[in-house]
Image: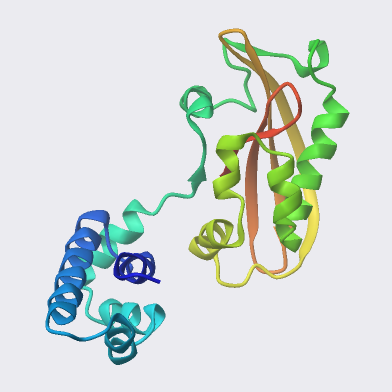
Amino acid sequence: MNAEQYVKEVAKRIKCDGKKKKEIKRQLLTEINMRMERGETLEGIIAQMGDASEIAEDFNENISAEERRKYRRNKVLIIVIPIAVLLVLMAVFFYWLLPKGKDIEQSKYFDKAEVEAAMKETIEQMDVGEFDFLQENAIPQMKAFLNEEELGKVKGEMSDDWGERQQFGAVYVAELVQGNKHFAVGEITVSYDNITVTYRLTYDEDMRLAGLYVR
C-alpha cells in the first residue's frame, strides 16, 4: 500500500461531504510526505497513525454537526448508470404509464412473468450476497455498484438491521423506450423483519440489470 492508497482508504470511511474529504486527504498526504522526507518509512507512519478505520473514526468524532447533516443530505440511495438517468427522470411511472411507456403485456421484447421472476431473483441474490451472480447478470456499467460495500451503504442508510425477508408484495411492470432501446422496469415492495422497502429494477432487452433504486 502506498501513501495515496492509505489516504484513500481513510477518506472512504469519513462521513462528510466531498469538499471536506478532499481537504482531509490533502492534509494527510502533506503530513505523510513531509514525514517521509524527514526519513520516516511509510510503514512506520501508518503504524503510528493507525489503520484506515481507526484514523477515520477519529476524524468522524470531530466532524461538525453541520458536516454530518451535509453528508446525510448528499448520501445517494440511487445506483444508476447514465443509460438509466433519463428513465429515472421520466419515472413517476408504475401506477401510471408514461407517455413513452408501453403495456408490458403488449411488448415484443419482454415477458411479464419473466421480468417478475428476474426481479425476485435479483432481490434474493442481493439478500444473500451473491455478488458474482449479480455482476454476471448486469450490464458492465452496473458491475462496480454490485458489491458488498456499495449495497451495504444503501442498506445501512435505511436501517442497520433489516432482518430476514418475509414476503414480496405486488409487482408493477412497464416497458419503457429510449430512442431505439427498450427496457423493462419493475417496482416491488418487500417486507423484512424490521423494515419494508421498495425496489425499482431496470432490465435491458437481454434481461441484464441496468438500473437499481431502493427506497
